Length: 212
Image (cartoon, rainbow, N blue to C red; front, side):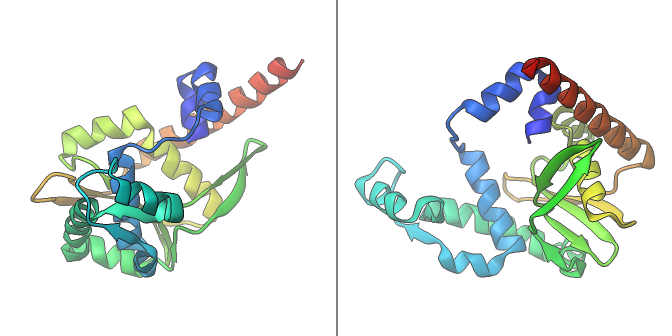
């Protein structure tokens, strides 16, 4: 995430690192869906509150006590419907089940820059990223470029250090929650590798200039 912010500009990176963290509804929904699909045992830790909004007293009390593990019932239900769509999709569910590691913290370097991250799922010759976004092929291709998903996937491939098939599993946040599985082309992934290496070198050079 930090390198993607730096790719926009150094100012974006500084803002990202120094601003208080705040999660949007879309981010919270994505986190819930990831837990339900990739780490279903963690759902037992959730504290689901029957309240109209997050501004109610009941929810605020739950959030103070349980932090990010508190959510509204309607948020939980929405995420569950999205997760069910992924689990019901034959190809998506088979790929996720095949992967041996889910949300595992990895550390590696790119061009000498220390990095860390949590690939969604990898192992048994595959690496995949789960995205809650519009799965229309034309729109998703644009999303990949806009949010540099190919650079993110390239960095994760560097981290696991083994040949693998690459996939994006995409599920629409809007009903009926259609699911698509995409394989990036070799050309797209090479662009991702080149972008990651370039941004890493530029970041290191910026740090030297900033500290000189």
